[in-house]
Image (cartoon, rainbow, N blue to C red; front, side, top):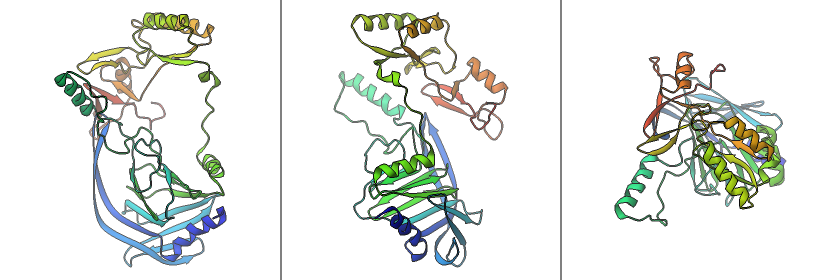
Length: 360
């Protein structure tokens, strides 16, 4: 199909009975253990809504008890806006798709490239669970040797980058303007999109070929900055252990004729040694003891055309200087009772910087 026919294919489903909505009420619980989540959703008062009539760009859906409307606009792609009684906070929409198509996307997925036949959660979670790593290390210790061919199981579709969007080999794409927990079910011949609140809108993009579709998607969500040219100027060496260790390793690399583009030191802010091992100290300022003379060393590297790379995240180790500063200023995520909400990283607790607060 050409792009116009594809757009009509989906807009026609709003009124021909192939599209339906499911609304319900729900209350979810979330439990996190070292970055991995368990969630349960108790849903009730379900209603399957089908098309009843149309008023211009407004498509009305109902089951005789609850009514919802979909407003279709072109901005410039087809965009669907949803309205329903605010007390319903669970949403699902079903569309008919194409037999044999391939589906890609939903952010960074590890298990398979083609998502056809999969149910993909839209949720960020640690890709590997700590207790499974610990169990693997314990097994090695007991048996006395590693098992390189053993695959450690993990939940499918755990990812650090989850995006409510997908692209089809039939040259259409969906982008959901939504930030709640979601599920995308890709069955042969249909898709069902679920969220734990009503989405702001869903954009449906169409094109005549894959390259044009990628361009349409970029125009909708924005284009990432170009990767700087210097990353192609040599190796990026991951080293940790302090200024002198970096200086020694860099000198060895140069002596061996290795062209180096950058040094990456994740422990630039210091480290803590726990029962789990050597870990980064989550206080995002240079450790002047471990990395003595770091600024001067960085200037030396730049004279050689070499960059110095670090690492940060949104967590602050409990008791660290920046944690205490953030706590004093109310910059940390809190429980309802006002106490700081902590996450546990292997063996120590940490607060989360509240990124919804511009001052934080």
